[in-house]
Length: 223
Image 1: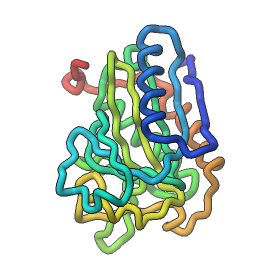
Image 2: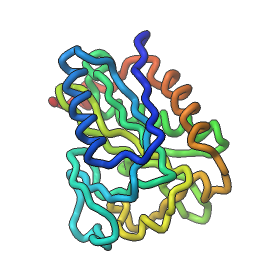
Image 3: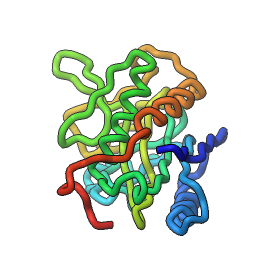
């Protein structure tokens, strides 16, 4: 792919409702051919989001932080300071209309970014996101993925734990998975600035998304 998306970095905590409104507007403009693709890097104030598969029993502390119901796939997740969020608005009509391959490409992007800091991130069948093997059968999630697609334009995206307060996850069952925990670069002993993460995200994106999606035809879904 020769055309690269626009990149935007917000240097303040972006309210969730504001981010959703901006994504909605941008996705409509991309679908209509009025705006280029966009990768938006930001942080949110502490909050929980509930995806389309969220179960009420997985919200353990409803009053702890604001809870936002969202149209992205997945279950409950946490967003907050110290977590790098990348909202990815790509035109999949020209990149390949294969949602499964797109999610796998997002996982590859996160894994490549983590590798730049010496962290081995891994994908797991049946568990969307990126995981770190802590040894002795323990696996912790370091990055979450949740997408939505409208008129074959993607939005929402990924979140990587750089240095968030991991105690904030105690108010939910993250992604509905009780048998595993969460981690971050800081929790792994790596002090990495958000600017460093951003540089690696962009460099890795340009490599991982250089070619169109090429998944199996049966993975293609009508949107």
